[in-house]
Length: 356
Ligand SMILES: Cc1ncc(COP(=O)(O)O)c(C=O)c1O
Image 1 (cartoon, rainbow, N blue to C red):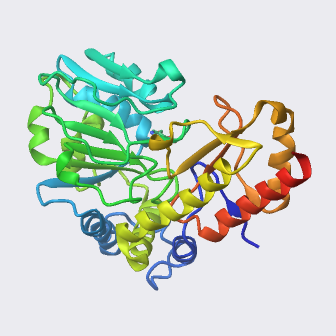
Image 2 (cartoon, rainbow, N blue to C red):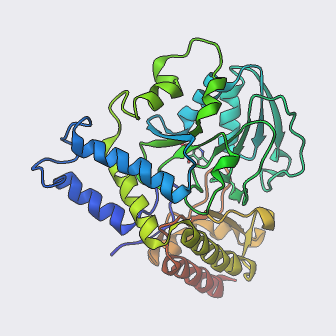
């Protein structure tokens, strides 16, 4: 029996993604070969790559003047590639948690970082109405904070080019791509298995690449010019990502994903807010729909491990909070169903009845 999976990433994937990838691993396109065994330069895999780019553009409504590439190295590699390529003098970073803090650390290797942060309240809110100088090379934001459970729910705009790490909320709502110079993220939440990173880059932003020697593999232009085939791409992961994109399309696209995200989040936050035992940690208007972070009221804190075990006995797995926050985190990405959330809510209610 399949569990109710609330892992933060890698995480639950659609049945279509798992089934079709499993089949392609055994035999790809009636070729008598596994997807792991065929050449990435062969026409069959090239078709997978081409399809994946077309689906990304279609589903995310990406304008023609943007390039879509797939790379290795995780979103963490982007933390260094972005300043390496685009930071000449100074950049603005919104620091909303662990991942933006890591991105800032890399940027500081290459120039000045102007930072606005929500660290003063343990990253439990998204700063608003802050000033960004117009002359920064770019503005960097993390739209969903996977660990702390906060999220920027709309598309912002600034005079300076906007770069967004959307690792953990890409494909969860329609995005106005033209407001961004670049969107990137690791695939391992809403897109597929870990091991592939997507970058969506506005072509004219590439004209701003800094005048410094950049290793070939770390240059965006290398990967754009070579259609993500400068080096051997992670073929199986890209195949799985394509299957997820087909699944998103079948499900009704990003509007349907958006509605599902609201329904899941309303159900779970509703249960948290209606409970005497559990409470949320993030400012209500900034709560993430992808990573729902909650804790026990102080007098029940000693029961944390018991609740994780109890939830697991009800087949709800992956709800232990990140080690830096404690408590609980239910990651409710696109493939998480209302039935999964209902199972967790029932476990919470049952546990509360027995212990509060
Ligand atoms: C928002 C965000 N950014 C960046 C990362 C780092 O991604 P990777 O592990 O692919 O380097 C993560 C990982 O969970 C994340 O959630």
